[in-house]
Image (tube, rainbow, N blue to C red; front, top):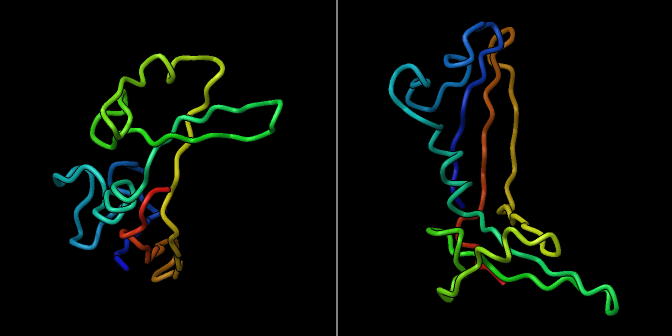
Amino acid sequence: MDYGFIIIDQTSVNPYKMIVNAQGQNYTTGYIRPGVIDSIREASHCYVGTYNSSTQIMQLKQLDDADGTKYTDGTDASNDITSSSKYVWMRLPEFYTRATEIETDKWKIEFAFDTTLTST
C-alpha cells in the first residue's frame, strides 16, 4: 500500500494555491501535481476495448504505459485508438480516501492505494 495526502484550501481564490501537497508546495512553488496523484496515475493503465455485439463480450488489450500509441507487446495501436468501433478505457487502482476538515474550509484528503496491482 502507498499512502499520501493533499490539502484543499477552499478559502484561496487562486486555483494554483488551492491544492497543497504534503511538503506544503503548491503549483506556484514549483511542483506540478501532488505526489500522491502521480502515484495513482502511475498505478493506472489504459486499454483499448472492442465490443462484439453478437457475443456481447468486450475484449480489452492494454496500451503501453510509456507510449499510448502502442500495445504492451510493442505493436501499433494508433488505428485502434482513433477507430469509431473501438473504445479507450482506463483502469484505476483500488484506493481509499478519508477527508477531514482541519480548519474552516481547509480539508485534508488522505489516500491509501495499492500500486502493486497487475494488469489482466
